Image (cartoon, rainbow, N blue to C red; front, side, top):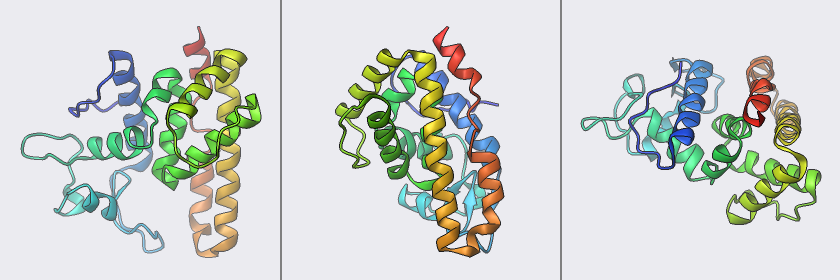
Length: 210
């Protein structure tokens, strides 16, 4: 179920609705409190690691991290996700332009950090449309313009489907490489592949292109 975030997001109603859907999907995937001994991130609450929560200014027990912000709770999961994994990496204009691809980028950023999906996006745009982007992981005006230009050139539905496939392929290869480099992470591989690859419903591409 989509989160009814109280965080000020900016943009129009459609963008706010897309963000709510993304948050809801993240919370469904991540669950509640987890403290797995093999997880290098340590304690997590709804997927937010203790380190990320502390950086955002949350000082309480991770089990008590609130989902929605309020006057008494200025730091919450909603704010951390929208700030760190949507606004700061430059993904908001992409979510607005293509909610399904935006969802893929955010979901991947939550699991691997924003820099990797940002680079994979730039590589994908270069491969699909010869966009000539620097693959630096910095999503700004040039990447936004290339995204919209490629979307217009290829067509909304085809662009969405192709980008999701390309991004999933790079993410899957990353997980394989991670396990090869650190076999202790194999315990997570099956879950990563099951829940992180192909997790954005391709039917959303058709819906937004209708």
